[in-house]
Length: 357
Image (cartoon, rainbow, N blue to C red; front, side, top):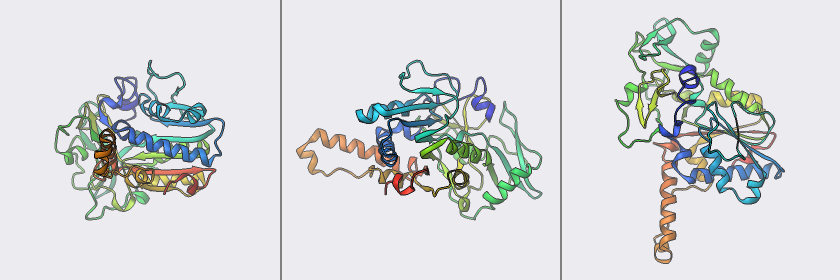
């Protein structure tokens, strides 16, 4: 997975970037950017409006979110912003010069660290539960064919035992990424989520071993001196882990088998409670973990239809409000992008000061 995503010809470091292959909240609507800007303004106020306000986007794609934030920010705020894109790809030639570009997270952040759909692409191993216990899944990197391999390491086993218990009988199906193409997935969704091949472990439940993401998030939170670390991602919680895991692939707007050959995104949903626990140990402060629907509504995106009376007074204004409401409805739909989870971990500031309610 590491090689397929971030190797010399990996999915995220070559080609046009993720926006050409799947639709995220960042690409869906300016409403999402407006809500993040309100979140940034809340952090700015909690920090006392510092002369330099960092906003660091981890897994920045081609810088789309930072460009949008700079475009929407009020002049006084924009003048103090220090935007940093963290991405392993080469800096886009058209990126505004005020946006810094680097392959790693800087130290001493004072402001907002953003990770929108980053953690789901932090590489993980996959395990399957057999009558003999957990076994790692091995994969052919060219075909995606899976076979059952050796037992996981003690570190893997400890994480699985604590964070991925036996599934409940009615665990909900996972929400998958939005497609760029309207025609949807190439194959049956369940077969794709279950993996590219059918191995010897058929009949047992699968798990993505998430401690690598815990470490990645803990390291990211540790880079914040004062402010807020915010992760937005598809995820699940301990009492409702999906029976078959969530490993899948995306290419050209379609969901495809997760063959780790560099030609497609290989992704799996995030055990957000495990990640939150790891961040909490670093931040030493309470965190907030809510759905995107709840978070965006608190930040002003309610998705409500504008009153029809506005159409008579201001037809153009009504159409603008209707478009904004439609975009907000898409972003807060629990069966789609609204199924994201928002993890907010403050560092050096009170949780209530940075979480809108």
